[in-house]
Structures are given as structure tokens and as C-alpha cells.
Image (cartoon, rainbow, N blue to C red):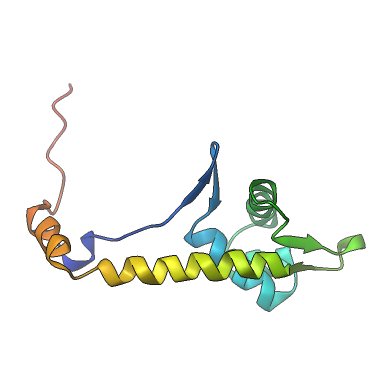
Length: 123
């Protein structure tokens, strides 16, 4: 049997070929709200400004309205009211998914899961 941490639920909201929202993007929105800029949020999460900017760009392109607004002249960024709304609903889905953990089906899957994969059959 695999360890207790072998099973996890990871929510991702997909828009075409993009991940519109996932745990990392939700954490980035929280960090932008706290730090007031994309670069500071990226640093707080241990990612480059470019990576953080690309994630924000993907989010802004996938939703009906932008989730993050930047200020002119590189004077920071803020999570929009709509961004806070999307983030709230995503966090609620994460909590609901977390409540599924520990149930009978969860325990059964954990009991059936190997601790490590078998070697590949392909040479």
C-alpha cells in the first residue's frame, strides 16, 4: 500500500489548451493581493518575474474579465474584484474536494495503489 500522501486531488480549470486556474495560479493571485505587484508576488513564491507574468497573462486571457490589472509605468498590480470572485469560487471547490479525502473510495484507492510503479515493459 502507498503512503497516506500518495492520493491527492488537484483541481485545474481548463480553457482550451491553457490551465485557466489551478493551485499555483490561485497562490499567485493571493500573493499579488498581498504584495501589490507581479514581481514581488513571484519572488515570494520563488518564481521569476517572467514565469509569474506568463501565468497572469494566461489567467487574464482565459476568463470573461481580467483577474489582474497592472498599473501604468510598472507601478504594481492588483487583483480585480472579478479576480477575487474567481479565486473565492476556486478555493471553495478545493475545500469541497478536500472533504472527499478519507472516504471509503479514497481508502480503497489508497489500498490498491503501489508505493512505486513497476518497471516499464518497453525496452
